[in-house]
Length: 319
Image (cartoon, rainbow, N blue to C red; front, side):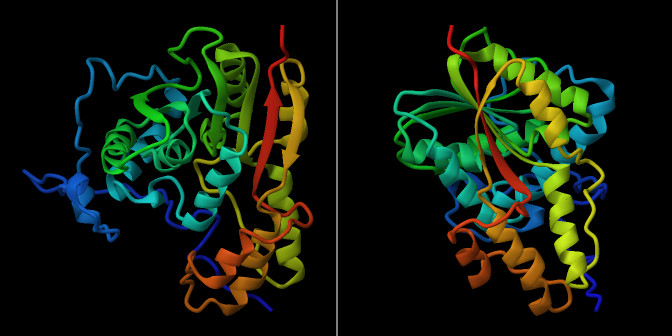
């Protein structure tokens, strides 16, 4: 049996498309004052560029990453305030935020590296009295992150956003209690850049601080594909801009700087249900990420190691 799922790969709203230039004189919708959760693409053609400091769009990225950065810059303008700016799977995106919040303590200073339009950043500050800074290498993402923050209402903590480069963080040593990355490392193009980002996380963390790495690995992707193949489903491949973590290699390097405290397979059951069983009920490749299977799958006990999203909890040794 073969089921065509060509319309929804791991991140189906992602693609290598080049968005056309907006019409002359086009402006973004006044999203900051809207309570609607329905977003039209035409509303978000241009990043609002709200209150950018001088030189705030400079990230000094290596030249080979510019194409990936430009993809996310366009995606930021395309999706605006929507959670889909970073990930179309809103159910797992929300659940991931809940999982990450369990590792934050009152008063923590937190860096969210690769914050996109700030959906999870604001979610964390809504429920925890922390001081959290979100950075992203796509200025459009930061512009809409600030709009999302303006819409957020009362928060338990505080949030700020700025354009930044995970390969060369603009923060002093020992600045943060926690550093979070969510699918940011896989958008750095190579294992070497991922290791550079790990070293930067180590540098800016205080002794005893946690590096919370929620990323996709080659190994879990292979596990899920083997399960799908046994069920007659087609093999799924990473998108062009993704470089999944090689788990043994990444952890072997990380152990020189961090203690591995936990590997949390928080999405394994979810992916079995939603990417191995749910496809048999999909028609015409139209996946609904808010349906009952997705909502239940995020909260069931975990089995196996099939979840693409996996949380590595790394601790910088205390001095």
